Image (cartoon, rainbow, N blue to C red; front, side, top):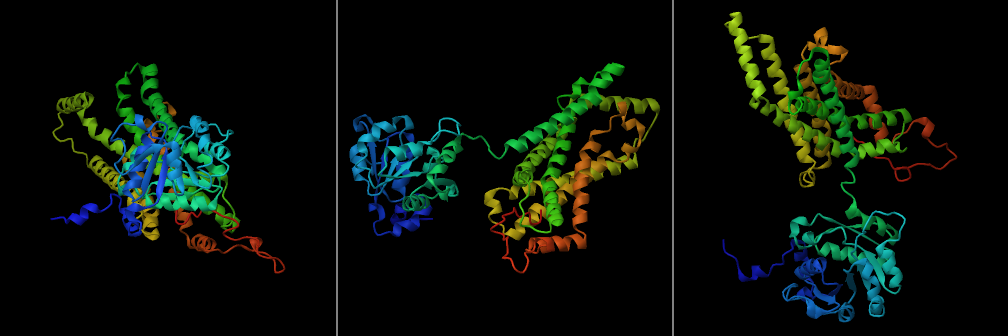
Length: 493
């Protein structure tokens, strides 16, 4: 393949390619950056790649090493950079140094001043950096934005174009200018309203996995419960009662028995809130009443719970493959062979055990495969390639298939052992029986919702039908609408 010389002039960012048709092209508007740190350098690289002229303002331009900025960037004093800007000026200095910019107040008057700083700590009551900057420059139009983008992301190519940029301002025109600029730079801008939202935007980079806290805590508590239950049932009580030493099981065997229980219960927790939401809608006879706060939060955390369930299933598969590598497994095999020789048994084949092992392994493999597909479609790049019906079929239809196969895997593993008294040492049931309770409740609930009398009524409610007690009288205006009473649409969950 050969390349024409003109192809070498193609801009780095594909998102900017369409913008190069602008008659100003590489001689685009001048955007100034006050500050010469790492963020300033990365932002300048991105702006130049998208066809803008850039002026960087430094307190002492002579101290900036040569080659730090692209050749197309003009390195000036802060005053000269502020004067050179046509409309937009980025304030890329630490908030504690804002007061040093007071001398630029006249030169920044009427211009869009973009604050890119982040909060130093989580403290909800204090004013934001952007609000302080707006007070310091009352004649400038302050916009908060670009603080959630790292210096590395600014220099990345267009494959990072889906990264969101949170923007807010009290001036609609200035905000529209920055929103358009973010699109030209290859990002996805999100309008968060007025400058009052700047505190939340500044604290966003400090929050560690904000939507994962509850699901991780729930998964950890489930793991802790099942692990301690197995430790009590299989290790501690036999040791105290009979002096049997099973502590060697703790690092691998006990963990491997805990993981599938956690994976199964967590997967059931993904689909239980959908059933509860459907029950609320059936009982209320309308979809225009909000769900309780705890249910709203639960519905919004199903993706995280599903991925954590998949993680536990993956670990269970890996641990299971490693069981035969243990020294204990080798010793157990030798002991079983010795007992068979001692008893004079020539054939140890047991048809029932063969069927049991093959069935529960087959269901486990199929369930793991479907669960892997669910995890794959949760990726934005994959999910965006599906239409709504396809996505719903995968996440709902195949999700219930994964839950059913995982439940069958557990049932075949347990076989009929739950009906023997020997399965309840110290009156404690096997752990797989505890893990089956919630999944079975969810599957039975789903079967009930599939009954025509309930399914048809629920479909009418989700299409906007309301029961008589919610309908307005003839002399009253309709009091509710989907806009007036927003409700999380549970669809086919």
